[in-house]
Structure formats: structure tokens, C-alpha cells
Length: 140
Image (cartoon, rainbow, N blue to C red; front, side, top):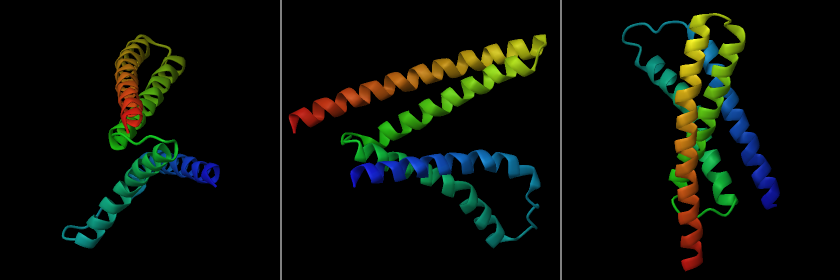
């Protein structure tokens, strides 16, 4: 039963990640809101924030199912930011492949450098939180 819950949590994480990526493609296609349209504005905000909230709580649920108990919220943020940084590094490498000019080389190099440092920092943060989680579980 626990493995089925983990599988469902992973499916939710992938689904919310795909929804977030799909939202970026739909930005220019959504109609502009008319001035004073509060319901439309609230609907747009809800539509934008719901996948992020779903991604956060699905990841947090997966971590709880994996046995993490100490500062699970911080571990969740560290994991999300780490994988976001890895995705940005991959995008930077793709820029290098598709933009075969000086600007592509420079922008790709800067992007890969910045996001690699971010991924490293997030991974270190995640490791420190997991060490604290293990030591907390030993004390309990």
C-alpha cells in the first residue's frame, strides 16, 4: 500500500511539473482581462498558483512517505529548487547546442555556471537537512 502511495505521489509530481511547464507556453495565448474584472483576476491567480501548491504538497507527501520527519517543508523546498536548477542547467546546455554563435556560447556558459552553483548549494542544503533528519530520528 505504501509503494502504491509513493507511485501516486510521483505521478502527481510529474503531472504538476508538466502543468507548470505547459503554463509557460500558454502565457501569450490567454486573453487579456478587462479592467475591473475581479472574478477573472482571481481565477487567473488561482489557475497560476494551484500547480505550484500541488507540486509542493505532492513532494512533501512523498518525503513523508519516504520516512523523513524533521523539517520536511525545508527539505521539500531544497528538493524542488535542486531539480529546478538541474532543469535550468539542461536548458543552458541546449542553448549551447542550438545557438552556435558567440552570444549563445556566452549566455549558455553564464546560465550553466549560475544554475550549477545553485544546484550545488541546494544539494548541500538538502544533505544538511537529511543529516539533521537522521540525527533527530535517532534521538527519538
